[in-house]
Image 1: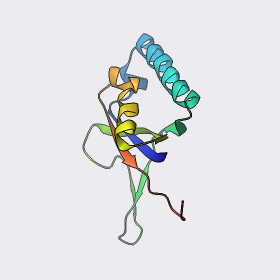
Image 2 (image 1 turned 90 degrees about the vertical axis):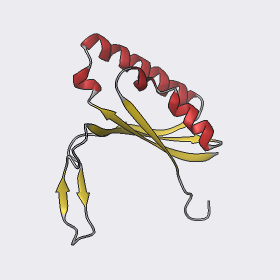
Image 3 (image 1 turned 180 degrees about the horizontal axis):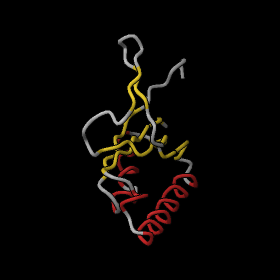
Length: 117
């Protein structure tokens, strides 16, 4: 099995853009998706990303407060999963119910083992 990192990017926020009923449905679908990944031994870790990000630049270690670009797109969270291949990881990401609720992109990144693993 290989490790993959999903970076979830959304336009807007499920917390502010959905009605209370839509948010409740979103939370139920999300919990079911995550529970399934956990039961199948696929999910290693997942978390939403909070506001207040910073960027350190190579130029004297200057710190820049977010937002970092003019796009409506924000990094909303990440998943660390295991899969046999990038194709399998893409299929796992494709099943994320967030696609039903808000404009979303999920980047699928293979993770490189370090230390002889």
